[in-house]
Structure formats: C-alpha cells, structure tokens
Image 1 (cartoon, rainbow, N blue to C red):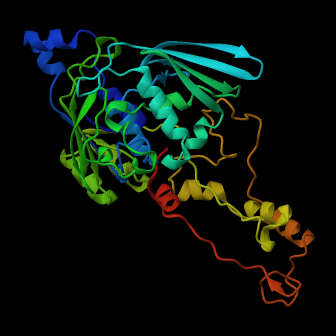
Image 2 (cartoon, helix red, strand yellow; image 1 turned 180 degrees about the horizontal axis):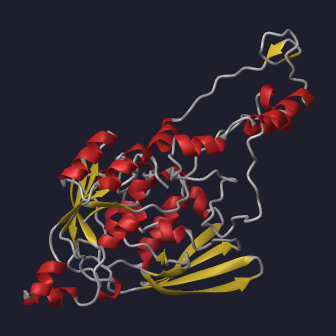
Image 3 (cartoon, rainbow, N blue to C red; image 1 turned 90 degrees about the vertical axis):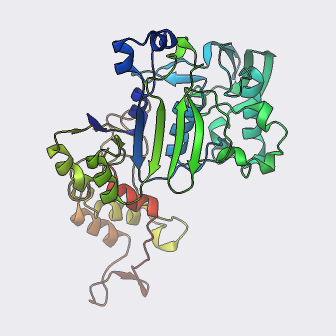
Length: 397
C-alpha cells in the first residue's frame, strides 16, 4: 500500500518493537514479512542539515528527532510528554524558579559506540545558549538559566517557571560532545558534521547525503529494545523532489512510498488510484499577512482591521486549498493547549471594512476610485514570502 502522509506520522513506519534481533536471527516466515526493504519518502523541501545548531527547516528537524537522533522526551497521542532518552524526570520548585532533573537511559550509544550521557545534554544546552553559536531558535530556551551535570546520566536544569517548559526537549536532540566539543561555537554551523559526517544515536544511522537530491539512513541494530529495537525497515531514504507533478508521477509509479505535502489539486487523482491512500491531519502551520504598524498607512488599528475584514479568507481556503484547511483565529492552532475555543475569527465583511476606513479618514475624495487622505493615496506594495506561496499552493493540512 502506498501512503501519503504527514512527516510526524511517517515515523510510524520506522519503529520496531520487542526482541527485534532475536526475531531476525530465526529466519522465520514472520521475520521475512516484518523486516527488510527500503522506505522512500519524498517532499518539496530539501533537508538542510543534520546539525541541530544550524538547521531551522521542519524536515531537517523531523529527520533529526525521529530518525538520526534521540530526544529526551516525546509526546503521546494526547500531547503529553513521555520518556525517551530520559527514562524519567522530576521537578522541584523554589519560589519562581523551577528545577528540572532528567535521568537518562544508560543503553543509548552514539553510532560510533560511545555512550550518550548527561554531558552531551549539557554541551548542547550550553552551545544553544552561547550567542556565538547563533542558534536560530535560542528563544525556545530563553527561560532556562543554567544546567548542571549531577552524574554521567543525570542532568539538572534551573529555569523560570512558565507554561510548556518541557517542550524544548521534545524538539531539541542532544548533539555528541565527543565529536563537536572542541569545535568553537562560532564554527559549529559550518562544520561538516551537518551534511557529511553526522553521528547520531537514534534508530537509523547516516549513510549518504547527495545535495539537492537525498538523504539515506540505515537501521541501527543496536537501538535499545526498550525504545522499540531495530527498525523494521533496513533503509530510510528522504528525497527532495521540488516539482509536485514529478513527485506525484514517481509516487504513482512506485518509486516513492510516502509523498509528503500533497498539492490540493492532486488529491482527487490520488484518491482514484487503488494503490494509494491519503492521510490528512491537523498541524501547526498557517499563512498570514503582517501589516507593518511602523508605516503611517497602517498605524491606525481601524485600518488594519478593515483590511482583514475585506479579505474573503474562507474563499481562499475553499478555492486554493480545495477546502483542506480552515480559517485561522490567530497563531495558536486548535491542537495546542493554549487555544482559545471561544475566540471567533473575523468574518468577511466588505461593508464593515468600508465603514472603518471612512471613520479613519480614508475616503475617495477626488472620485478616482482610490481612497485617499490628506492628499495621500491608499496604496502599498504587498510582498509574499516564497514559503507562504508554497504553503498556499501545495499544503494539505
């Protein structure tokens, strides 16, 4: 069965369970159907790097956190933190300060055979906090003050109390100190570790990277049984195929097993293919327009609200997304704990938009069809980021 699926759910293909090594060695018929083969996943985004200190794109982080490396925690189906590299944790309070202690598993090895320890976790934390590293998402640890290694498998963090304090450890995989510890912080982004020699500790090991084409990983036979053991598949290949029609053609031809970020215009054709199925799911991505309040034209909140009321956002969802989406109420998605269920989105109201512009003094004084105020025409240049354009044209969510 060919599957079109989201990147987070893709990892369902990767994890084994139970005594994988024993089952492989028996050579039974059951083993032959459970283990082996290659899974090829394709998408429109090129994974930039396996270096946590350098990458910001989502697909790189997915490959890091679910394929090559092992994060401290994961989320379960209820978005609750569960142990992974950390077998347990505890918290203690001291006024506004929170102390978070992770107790690590002792059977996670880097792919060169070196144990993963609390020193790797602290090293990663220190480099993220170091301005010289230039970590693009350092704000995720803004409320964390310091880290202390208690022993080789215990690390303690001191932080200011805040909601979601566990979340950074779901998305931040520790890096190997024994490989990168002597690299100056300012040089970490350029280090060949990211694209040529990444050393992980996750269920798959790095094999090959072809720039502009693919990343290849193979099953890690030493991955602990307590975390699922050796993956069922032998190889995992992530391919970068920019053109949607090419991705679809390779998928339908059987050269691609999982096609991520399906163009809405392709959904009907895929649904008609007997060997394929589509999995649609809610995610955190959204597209938005940011009115620059530093420009005189957008200083008045009535103007900004009028522009929002004048845009038929539901029509955009229906026409461009083929109905595969919803109008956002704000930057917090429905599957987040902080989502405001009673908050209502602005409706499409061109008449109301006109009344607000009138009240703000933007009226067509000279009858040329363009509103103006104090001799200034209400006109501006609108710039669209390529990422947003790709989102609108190609994303199913």
